[in-house]
Each structure stands twice: as C-alpha cells, then as structure tokens.
Length: 282
Image (cartoon, helix red, strand yellow):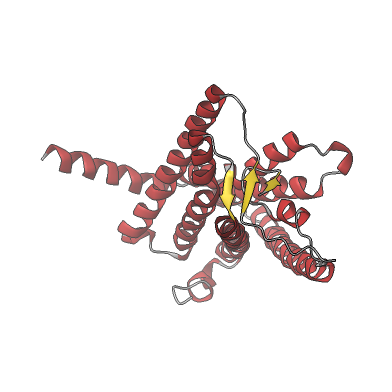
C-alpha cells in the first residue's frame, strides 16, 4: 500500500535550544542581514546614480548585488523569525518557495560570476575590442535551518531516482561548464598580464580581477565542500555550519569585497554620503 499521507508543514533545525542563545542568534543574523542590505544597497545606489559607472563591469556588479540581496533574503529572515519567536515550523508552500528562490538566486549568481570572468578577459586580453564585444546591448523534521534540497529529498516517499539523477547531471554539467569557462578565461588573462612590460600595468590588471576571484573562490569552495565532503566527516552540526557559509556569508561579504578593491565605486559611495549629509543639514 502506497503512502498517501499529505505534508502540511516542516520542522526546521534550530540553532539553539535555550532562549538566550536563540536571541543571540537572532541578533547575529540581524546584524549580518543589515550589513548585507547596506553594502549591496550602496552598490545599487552608486551604480544607478553615477553615469560614470554605467559600464558593463558595473552592470554586472549591480546584478550581483541584486542576486546577493535575493539570496540572503530567502534564508535569513525566516531563520531570524524562528529564532525570535522560538518557532521551528514552516509551511509546505513557504518551504517550496525557499527551495525555488534559493536555487534561482544562487544559480543566477554563479552564472553571473562566469560572465564576469569573460568581461575581465576581454578587458585585459582584448582592450581595444572591449566596447564592441561587451557593449550596453548586451510535519517532517528538516535537518537544516532553511529548506535545502538534499534535506527535502531525504523526506521524499516517491521513487524519483531518475528525476533526481537527471537534475543532478544537468546541474553538474552547467556548474562544470561555468567553472571551465572561468578557468579558461583566467588562463588567457594571466598569460596576457604576464606579457605586459609595465609592472604598474600588471598590478592594475591583477587588482581588477582579485575581487572576482575572491568571490568565485568563496562561493565555489564552500558549496563544493558542503555537498562533496566524505560521509565519514558528515554531521548535522558541520553541515549546518557549511550551509551557513555558502548560503549567507558570500551574499553578505560580496559587496564589501568589491567596494574595497574598486576606487571608482568607493568615490561614488563617498559622494552619495556627502550629498546625504549636506542635504540633511539644509
């Protein structure tokens, strides 16, 4: 006899059992979320307000900031609400929406990072063609603090082996394709940079790539280790920490990484702050 029971809600993994630690986690999550909103919001404002930043590179920055906001807004607000109200339950509809939007934003961010590697390749290896090539036309217990795909699949009662295998092959193929694309782009970039006669020119070219490399490395390494770690070192607490690293930390620090290494972006943000201060004084 097949299992025909319906699922109406899920129970998410709580970060702590005591009320004091729950409030501490709420404050920590709130600080991270506000920092992500502020950092990515400043990038969005700067890229939208300054016409000097209306270039393909900053267009990618703007899209990455939007995706970071969407990604972190998919997981943290629900986790904060659960910690604040001491509630582990989430509805079937909310859980499905979390899975959909998290996969959408994290996949779109990975593809955006792949396209950004090509943008840096054209800018460094083919600077005279940059304008033409990259132009403006262009109640089940979920053992996790948000609705993560592997944890949801563990609860499935249906025989979905072929669909899971097909989705896995499709995802791995796209992921490996993006990774190979990024690696090939940077092989050409490094070869072009090393042939530059000026040390200052080499330093400037490398400095434009460092933020992108840092974001790619953080996103890929945490995600790969979370999903490909050996079963012998697997534990609920370790998986909880790893999922926090790849789902929350990159969207929160991407804005900081890009803003610290980009002088034009820092100048625009400084102008926005000065304008806001002067406008407030008036």
